[in-house]
Image 1 (tube, chains in turn orange, cyan):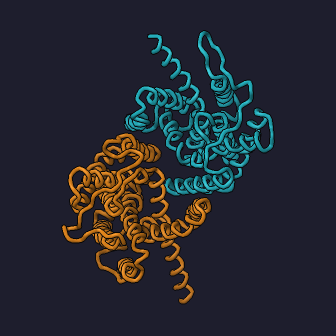
Image 2 (tube, each protein chain N blue to C red; image 1 turned 90 degrees about the vertical axis):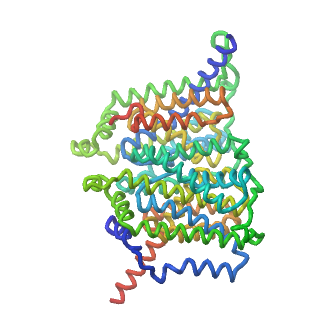
Image 3 (tube, rainbow over the protein chains, first blue to last red; image 1 turned 180 degrees about the horizontal axis):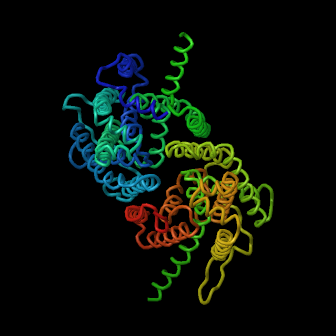
Length: 327
Length: 290
């Protein structure tokens, strides 16, 4: 297992494989051929960016966090507050929210990453709880339990207006996701990314060979927080609403579930997991929310017991078995 | 001045009752985490199960209050032993992430089952007449039920501590917490010890959940909503001891009650902030060993 996972650290070396274009082609097909799914699709793209940010620290850095919604929610609220108080330019709001989440990630990461194990888990949980409590109680700024609705959003670059069918929102999210994907892809293929995967496998040994483990982790954590914040900002801008669900513990748990469902520590697990999870939820949860929750629980237990690589891990194994039977 | 004394006594009383409930629920979590190094986020499920079984036992089966309480705890303890043998035991050697995901999965399952069986609204078992009124202690009146909670928890704590310090089982648990492989090599059956301890901890959680239903409402999302509190109690006190979570539970019970009384507009903010500060100062908790 560790050997296989270590190998994925190098798998996405610079050359672009044809299969890597698949998600983007699929997104464009949805955009042109299935207009009724464009709003849901836009939401999926945003959550993929969020999952990608978690993959960077969890899948590659080996940092198990129960509070990643803190950065997503911070970005979401920052974008909302920026739009209300400063102005509705979406790119300026996105930049401000990303910067705010990065700063918060740097500050909290510097604290969290000094610990290990249960203490680390607890600190991430405590930070997310604090952010939730602030969003909940600081009513004048955050809107409290009602959240901020009718957040003003201007046209992108002063040209592209957001429309009711979610087409602009979809393309906007797609563009930001592509930028985030390119960034993460470059990082995990770089020496820095390989060293980060090394700290996941054995941080004591990395320390022993002279790698600055804490600084590497902190840098990855800050980047991850920034990407999560950008995803949160996208959600606020495309729905013109931000509420407490963006900072909830449930969301931190759900994003973990989605990433692991797709397969963590492999770039495209963050694409597959949210897509499958959200589409399935859209169908099943409407019919019976109880059975949906039950199903997700059973699925999680089964993944942990039998399929630790998630959907993509299973696909890998199936492909290997096919090749094996042919040879 | 009199008003101040009144509110101080009231905070101390209700904080103590809350702390005692938190202790009953969390002590099992602390011991299993210390013994097996297992991050069991689903511990609150057992407390919720205790609360719901109590409702079924008193309302559907018509059992009297005390036998219903005992039956609920025993049922949860037995069920948890089965879970431990069949599922938890497979993951003792797995990484933190696997344990976290597995127990989140269990929470999802229990939330769904609870909602299917009992509906989404909070519920409570009816109290016996004896515990309904007020009890006069000195010049003041206190709710009889909470007095009973504090008193019975005190007895429970005494029994637990005596059990861990004075019995053979207690000595084996302490040995296994200190050094698992060594305990095994001197002939202690750690597998059986784990199962027994796990079942006992879950039974106590069920007791806490059932007794504390008027302090922590029994709803299907209980395991999610209370998870942070239980984990904070355990992390504050330190793993693998009885005293650690006791200290943690008292601190949280009293300070949470005090802060919510004095500065309700800040909610639970101070608790989380204090937890952070404390964990940075002592990552292994107040009584945890380095």
